[in-house]
Image (cartoon, rainbow, N blue to C red; front, side, top):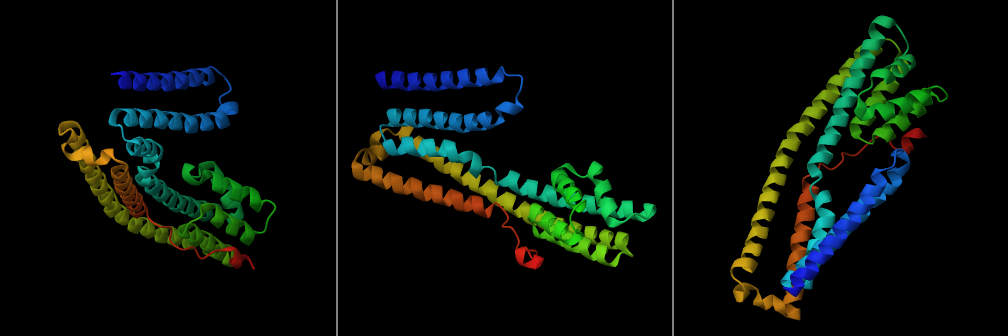
Length: 279
């Protein structure tokens, strides 16, 4: 009973400290000025919660390895669960490149303006996923030559599709005539690339779901042994050697989860526009 009271006291202290800090920062009217502090607060708050949960698990179970494992899970689970969001964001950026190329082709068609002017005019309607990169490109084109600006644009996008778009724009700028048709064909190529990556992402999403189900089943089984069977299956972990074995088991599970997370995120295809291309 005393251990439970200590655990509840620790949780209350961590929650109270977090609420005080969040309330203090929430009263300011200039949120932008507090953004660096807010980022540090989120980082610190996660660690406070992790420490509190780890302490509770340690006190309740009597196993320090469980406390450390629980704290580590709180810290790293958001990263482990972000694979789907990372893949979706990458695909959204590629779709934005396709949309932007089609808008450039439309601007070049009826107005008979140059490609540089079309890029600068496209800033107003650039897709939000690449709006910052397009705006930076337009600014560079005011003082830079076309090719170096496009190479920097490819670096900003940091994807093979971005390299394809930058190379196509350089070719269109070099030849001039037929630039709209070339950009339309380029957008079609990007569309096919996005379709292939989206199809692959469906398979990766299935793998991520399977991994989550297996991890959930394993966690429920372990908790069931601890809660329902008492010391029948868990007494071996009360010794130092048992804690070492449990640490090894949890380490293997953690390594497997990290490996599955890496499998759930598409590796970046190799780029072909690198620093050497500037020479």
